[in-house]
Amino acid sequence: MPNGAIIERELPSKFKDSVNLVLQLRNPDFTTSIRIADTVNAFAQATFGAPIAEARDSQEVIVQKPRTADLARLMADIENLMVETDSPAKVVINERTGTIVIGAEVRVSKVAVSYGTLTVQVTETPQIIQPEPFSRGRTAVQEQTDILAQKEGGNVAIVEGPDLRTLVSGLNNIGVKPDGVIAILQGIKSAGALQAELVLQ
Image (cartoon, rainbow, N blue to C red):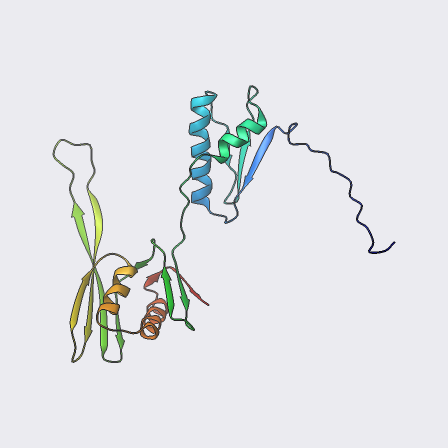
C-alpha cells in the first residue's frame, strides 16, 4: 500500500450512561479542589435542592448526577461556574534575562541582608486589630512588616509593606540591578525567610 493507511474504530461513548462525573484538576491543589466542590454544591442546592459534589483529594472532584438532570447540560452548567483558584507562593527567576516574577502570596519573614554596600532589614511587628463596638467582629492579630534598605554613600529608602513585591520595588528605587536583586532573593531563601518556592530558569 503506497503511503500506508490508518484504520480506526470509533470507541462507543458512555458519557450519557454515566452516573458520576469526575473532574480532574490539571494542577492538583486541595484548596482549589474544595472551592470547586463548594461552588458546584451552591449551584446544585439552588437548582436541584441538594449538594452533588465532593472533593475526593487534591486532584479529583466527584459530581453525582441528579436523577432529573441531563448530563450534558449539567456539565455545561458546571464548566461555566466561576471558581477562584488557589495561587501557589512562587518566585520565578531567569538569571540570563534578569527577569523576576513574584506571586501575590509570597511573604518575607524577619531577615537582614547585606549585599556589597547595601543592607536590607525586614522586621515584623504583630498588630492587634479591634472590631467596632457592638459589632460581631473578632479581635485579630495582623503582622506589620517594615523593610529598611540602606546603601552607603547613596539614598536611603524606607519601604513598608507585607510582601516581597514591596521589597523588590524598594531595591529597584535605590538602584540595585536585577542580578543584585536575584542574589538577595537567593540569600533570603537560603536563610529560610522567603515563604515561597524559588524557581530558577
